[in-house]
Length: 145
Image 1 (tube, rainbow, N blue to C red):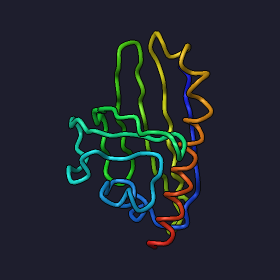
Image 2: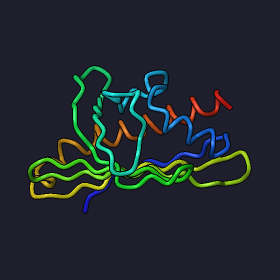
Image 3: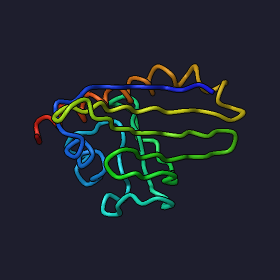
């Protein structure tokens, strides 16, 4: 299965990074890749969320629904989005490096019949968006800390 990936070390404790990631109402302050269509509704395992993304700054947002399949507070958030012939799973993980440093990892795993046809068109822009979000989370969490 193809996957896209970004990882960054953040000079802030895991709790600070988690708070920045999980509080969707602050996403508009720092995140130019993912957007929440209902920011007042918190993440909860089993809940469906309405999201959108913008791979590049100028393009229109693409809306999608995702189901939260794993929520381990302070450590991991995972959701799955499914469309005919296409499945996307996003995993966001936090790992302690030391007391005041955290490794953030975002991985998107793609599967389904049309994935291989779409992948050449998605890979570069989607990968850039995932990396951009990682950098922006880093800057936001470090400023907050």
